[in-house]
Length: 249
Image (cartoon, rainbow, N blue to C red; front, side):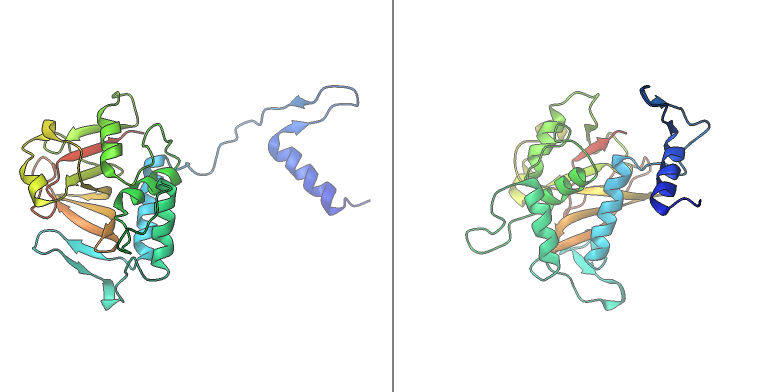
């Protein structure tokens, strides 16, 4: 008699899992499947963060920001409509980033959307499976910068001065914000609590990095960062990069 579909399905499952059931009253025996290997390599957390960052950039219309001119300019492919954090469906994405990182209200006292670039980095980390112990949930970049700088080198994230380390895809680069704050910092050892902006490195080419960050020109935007001959980041007035957070696999 032909097998019905439920029994046929059960038989396939048992074959695939390498399990066999013994006679009644005996314990089941797990049979090892011979020479079975996955058909693909599971992406690690670094690769998942890069993929997610690119996904969100695509959803925002692929804006590209130039930080080499003052003031910075943003361009969209094929003169596409400019994205903005306050417009649907973009606000729903910002809302999601924010409440992954904090329970604080996203709307400020004057009705403005609060800066969400830190929440974006946290959302990338949480969504990629990075635990709280490696990168804490916060809407302030400084909170996770301080966490990393105070940690042991054996952790997933390790901090470096911008002129001592060549970033690679999956690393995070950070710059202080505000003219007065920028002028008061002379080297890596003087980093202190304050306003920062951080982007995720998503690609590397000779002389250049691609980075993606949130709340850049009111969107998830991509920027091209120039490198010196040793592949170190060259700070600019618009983005005085001072810190690299290396992500180790």
